[in-house]
Length: 416
Image 1: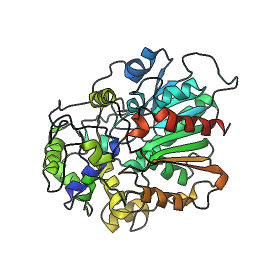
Image 2: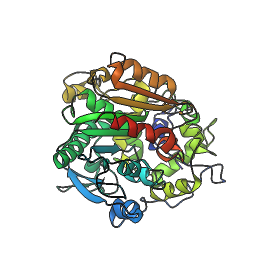
Image 3: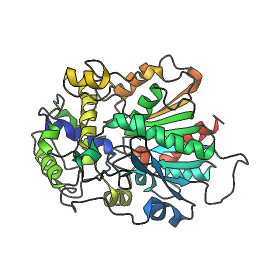
């Protein structure tokens, strides 16, 4: 189980972002760490890839692809080109949909429920050409030159690089394969990098519409029980303490750190899923067990620091190097540039779906995001509020098909 939160000390700020991993981790009968007692190491190996492990076994076609970014990372992608009934349901050329996961997980998290309940297969069965994107740092990512995950340089990135390199690379790849504009779906961190990227016009000519599920653009009002402990975080010393560029939630250093956080006064780690994400209404215990077999995965410590800065500063900005002269060297100005969400094209069809019980994507923070979109074409902006939903329900809720996914399908079909 992950304990994510930030704290009054510099290091505790890091923890808040393990929460963005979409952790559906229940109590498992231990007050201080069902997750801590589990096997420490990498996620369960998928020898033949995500397609073989989670897609073709259900009778769907699936393709494994490798996508190279401009800065040298080889990203894994999975394509589900059609539903189980085969052929082309609509009679027209299939519209591509690109689905982006959150932090500390990969595309596998979208496939943990049954084919009748998970979003990628529902989309495929509705006639869409589905592509699952996996960011750098996930289990199948490699560097095409000489960098290896054991080298610090491999982990020298934050979510800025996901905006500038990973998303453009996967968009280009899908667009070149399909010659069609792309529907985008992001959850949690996948919403943040999508919003930031689209605000800079990176995918303007390739993007058809966007659906943001449980958006985390702003995090100022995060109401997680663990987050309260870390309201005023100073993040500059995190990398120094861990001494490594890779943040591995299952590694020894992180485990010791997170155990210590659970013993912090006022922090109760008995039911982490509630303490971290809010009271999820609709998770299946077997899905949670499957999640724990595969996740969490590593990310860059720098990425965690950048996320902590996003909470601390209350703005969506590029990575802060901590010194005006360093920022000047990277950006030409003393402070990191802001991602201006209001620059997203006003005529881009957008669906935003958020929950009333979500302690990460808090209602007030979503309100701030919507305020940034107040000049958006009202006919192009759809908003869905789900009173009983929390963060993990959006990707693993047993009733998500009826409540969220059917809305997404209808939204995309209305854009054709």
